[in-house]
Length: 288
Image (cartoon, rainbow, N blue to C red; front, side, top):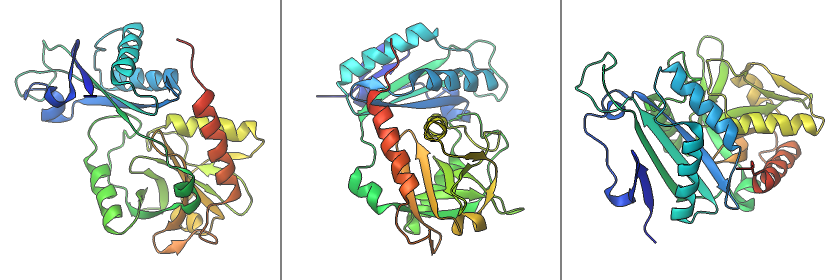
């Protein structure tokens, strides 16, 4: 079955979908995006994702392409037309097409694009094996809390990680050694005291929807949660580490740079949170 994309009010074959060469997303990265997981045929944490979408639009002063209820109808139609039960929905909105000039155009209709594809969270064998991360200098702008399509530093960081045999990059400030987040994931550690630690949701990181869900699941499980900065040195001496995102769920980290995390195997707390998140993902549908 051919994939279907949504582009500015039309459902079109994915292979022929297109936007204008004058679109400000292409010219200036003047746009935002969102990725929502699909599990068992429903959207996972749909409303928090849409709340973040609205916030990102507002922070960049981007007009919404349509009201939320209409967006949700299009999202469900994309799910139906693409027949995806396990996968992701990608949404992107830009300021639209206009003559190339940096200031906001006086007249331009927002561009809205949605795509949908099959994709699974890491399976049991991948989770049991865990992955490595590579520390890279934090070189991004000071508004990482906006889910902007301007992702060049993230792309370069993740490429460097892959070239060093790592799955993900961890942005690390050279001034104080603090780990902010990953190239497309949030970073967690479990120090020797057994607490769960992750960077607070400031403008230094993108506040992940999966991050928030995992923090909620951890608190429900009675874990002590600390939203505070942690250093790369502290992470390397931790007993566990993991990352979270829409596309990874809770993914154990077993190596940071050249150093194994503890015994180099996923920790029990990480595996428990993975199981809790997988159960939520499969059963946590928000009523339409």
